[in-house]
Image (cartoon, rainbow, N blue to C red; front, side, top):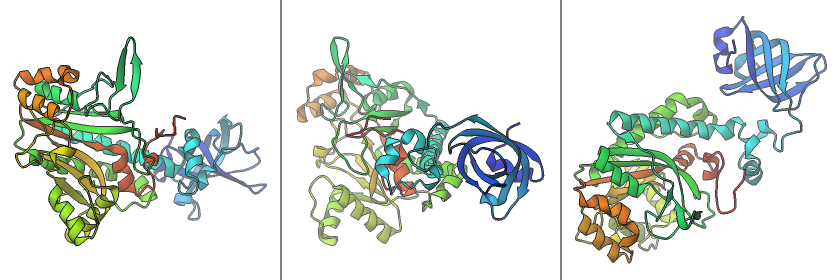
Length: 422
């Protein structure tokens, strides 16, 4: 029976069978050292007298597990039998043991199909999978229902900008930029819903924090009192996600040297107006209605220095810069919020308008044609409850948690302004 590298400490003095990839090799003539890498880690294999295959060949080893303080992990396998299952046909474009995303980012992304095999390259994806698992588990316990909404749609959730058009038989359709409208409809069915799915935004940004396709973790909840209910939910949700990642992907977090945050509790809040005042008067940073990346970074630093918090809720955004479905207040603000983590926006959310007449008025005020939203609007004729929700960008959260230099390393095959392959 196959044994994984992570389980070898329980088999010292025993003969085992391993299968994996040739991570690294060194030929000293009579003695040859191989590093075998499987999904759980790397171990040194000692053999001799064989013709060594190229790195990344897949192979099987049968041998004795012994302690060796000089070997990686303090163990090695003294091989009795080595079988090459599938030889690599040519050298890899990047030496996997020497991978370093800061050194050759374009090369690492161009040859992602093989560079992802590196321990550091695959670690963010393992952590992200754990975060998503924690996301689902927490919401399931809170009686949420997972839903699956269309990704080819007639209109965008936020109007006509930022949409990728596609031909759909005789009609023009678009890739969904958000499940927003559908998850609101489903609140009328299940009251509490969530979705884990990709979304697309046709933005020409070419920065270290933007992707044109990313994984959105969406939540929507009915019968709320205000956006405060949503922020309280997100605090508990993020706590579970962080706990699950640390529990099941702790090795990967340590490998990347990440400064893991404490679970968010009693996250400090600043209204949008107060945040702008602080930026202008206390931090000397000129800012408009929209907060720039630098403004968010400064506010994250401010939260860390004033409250010792990596997290900061920005609330009560002006109606002018929020989507048409955001619940308005009489003073021109909305029941909306963003969540910053270490100065980067990872969440946007708020309470929604739930009355039909108010939605029509809001669409017209935004200069949008209600005709394009008839399929969405119809449900609001039938007693929709007060509701709201939020969305977390999985890659951005992963990037910031692990201190990655670029959000592209938090997605297996990133899609940006210039990248359609691999």
